[in-house]
Length: 250
Image (tube, rainbow, N blue to C red; front, side):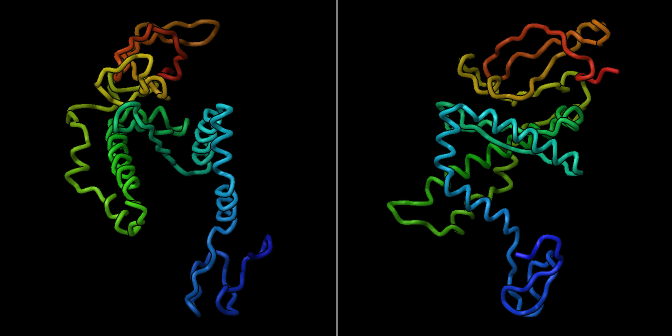
């Protein structure tokens, strides 16, 4: 590794001096080490990951890890990136997955009302199902399959992808109050037991139906929100007063 502050490093295959950003030596064509520090950190983590997982679950620190993920996308956003973090959870008792998207707080209001997010989550759920089914079949009778052959199984056909995309009304407008959301829940119409419903228990966002009233309380503008029922179990929410600026208030 080059010393801190240097802009040149020696090729690993010949005496040629290369810029730090060079990934391949033009003289001997040797591939240069890339993101060595990150690789070292990953190697170190892999050595203790089983212990880390056990401690994290034992001390119920998964929420702290998720909070770190939310903060990470916020940091990337203020640096000029526009990240979206997808993650999925297996639905209890079913061979399917529930996808979620972590959106930077800076752009959440502008992004979360768009129907494209429903499509993106549907595609990700499809990908998760194919990946896990493939991953379970990588080793059969103790014989490891060719990784390339297993990877090919992840290539979804156009028909499979399109079948997972929900039909959209061409007249639908993303700014319509019925589709706007301060918090958004994935669209799953199958009713579940309310205590076991993974949709509203794990969701970061929920859809609302309309703004009923507005008021100013202690110098702060508030709106009375009528929430839509949970799309998974049908649980109804009481109307609540919320800060006006979270609903596009002026």
